[in-house]
Length: 435
Image 1 (cartoon, rainbow, N blue to C red):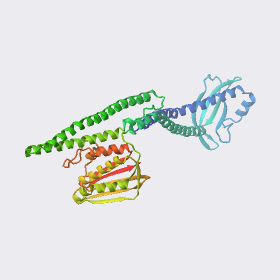
Image 2: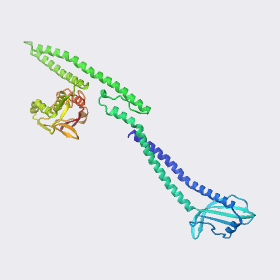
Image 3: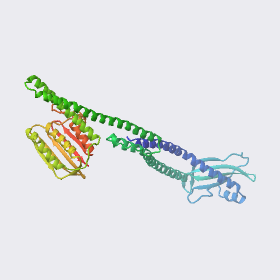
Image 4: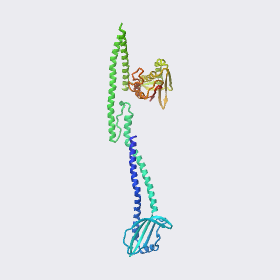
């Protein structure tokens, strides 16, 4: 799971929890708030009535005793004034909720009861407001509160996601540009990724520092291989010359001749290994030019002529199906070496009477060349290690495990994508995708 998604989920969960808690508090407090608001209105109305009370108003209210003397068409409120016995005791207003009937309709009302003395007479005042309106208001408040909470949650999630995306953008740029896209330390981009976050600056600088060390070690390794290869070739050539001269000595015993011949064979194998390592080193050090126009079909035809004898020796069927003449700018000698190594492996590890199919054409605006054999194939582990130096897919065949390492170096040098698909006892396919 991406860090951005984790941040968003964490923020969402915490905000949902906060919103749920606040919503629950508001919902549970809504009744109390509504009742307090309604009671406050009743108390204020009581105060206005008492303040503006006069004899005419009292007579009007008393003339309709025991009836609802003031209510609107919706029957939402009423006022009752009742004459009560004297010698009452002063008391505060009391508010209750009870049913009342208005013109045959029974509803719940919030009722304020208040006893007061006016011009030596005691009266009881009742003020009522319908609970139906209150319940409707509460339901509306609940609905809109729910809408606001959900809307707030959605907006919060979107803004959190956008903010984390903005915040983590430099991090993903560092990962993408300085780790995922790096296939060669010599081509590493040391330019700092713009960011205002100190942690990302530290990460960027640390990766740059690490890559400088790796690049230095990589350069030293390549230089070491090149120097050693050059230094070893000279004594090998001297030893080969001396052994060849000894072979030409007259009357040399057969035993000595066989030992000298075996020594020459070992030196030649060593020379091949050194030349292969030297080739890889030169390719990786960009010591070749890529200025030649190469006709891939022509190269394949030339390679077939060179390897025709080996193909016929194993009675292998060779099918060349290249639909387009594709011209590629690069180093002709290296491309020739790359193709020779692939086709040579297809011959070496193929079965007698097998098949080699070379298929080429344009796919998705790129030239694809696929070389397939029906040989021994490789398991998954061997495919993963196929490009490692000195690792071989089949120890029964002669070789040094450098062929595909050379292929990979040349492919990288020309920015050619290379893929290997193989199934044991069924064969191997090597695909080249040219830029």
